Image (cartoon, rainbow, N blue to C red; front, side, top):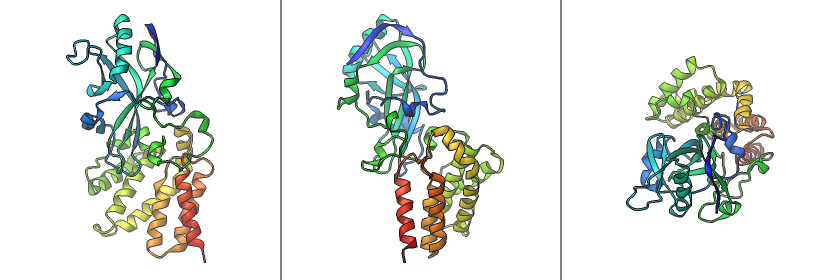
Length: 323
């Protein structure tokens, strides 16, 4: 399954591979890590609370030989930073461990991605690009058959699909990038305390008072809008504040949209427009609700990362403007 060469090679991914989004155009990673189900807490450190779309978090993984493992002498432990998150599948470790031992390589790092964390699929897993080295390590050339093998294949959006929006014919959570993109961005806004909605509101407001970066502000706005809307029935004026913040957020799209295009290559999910359309519809304000649908469609343009949000706004607009 793997073509192996017994020598160490230099890293072959750029230092900014995660931040710049280079991984989105790579071949599919492999589902070769086992035992993540028993180490969910370690993986959850790099994601947020359960949400509708789940997470897709690019992250480096350390592969560490365990020749003295009492269960499997070929064992290769997988760590993120210093946290143990699983083991390389036994049958693959049996092929890789002689390569590592011969090269006297006890540890090296490869690119990976954490997936999961959706309400209807809460379990988190780690998939790896074994041939994409972050640190010096052995050359592992993946046989194409591994990509299609049921035990290792991962549903993925390949580079050939990049010019068009993602189809919603399959389960959305299985498609790369079906979320706001916040998990891939991982900027300063992630430091906002999100223990509960009240704390999030205060933290996001404080963050926005001083932050100037367009993407940082965008993701902070997302947090603030979600928290305000959740508290619309418990905090006086929260719904009005929600509408005001959404309007401010939209006005800043002049700077945010090109920043999203630069970072992701396309426009990921923008929850502001759908939620405002819903809020105004519930209030009986059909004309403003329709206007928010049009605004969202205009911002997405022809650059949506996924087609689902477009379809949703289009359907809402049809219903709102029907006589």
